[in-house]
Image (cartoon, rainbow, N blue to C red; front, side, top):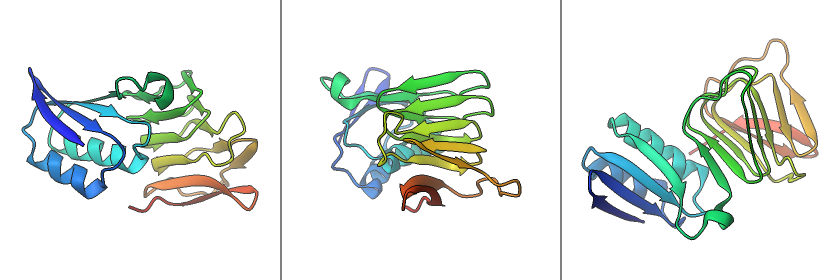
Length: 181
């Protein structure tokens, strides 16, 4: 991890070896400025969440991008907005949405789908057949989830996501469990 000040902003470089506590401690001590985050392909969803929560909690604007030289290897698309009804986001890699996915919206990824907000639209992780892919959301309230070739439909009386949750394939079916720190 490297944090440095540039003209008018802070630049944070994450290489995937940082812990959530280390990242949080650095950001809590950083000056309140715009923050540009360079991500290596090994950076976890938990670290992205910590960066987003800590920086936005301090009133800092955050922008993410792949680490220079890793444009092809990273294959992570970061959508820094809410995905609205009728919109579709698609990527061969992982998709990180920094906002909500509204009903009628679709997020399709060859890797994981990570939503730092409410997931109420359709999410399809592992679209190319990757059964190890997962769906992560701060509020998982979608009526339908897909991972690889598996499909899960929420029951009529299902509670909407009241805590962060993740969906993955276990025992040949999609299961939803709390997203623990």
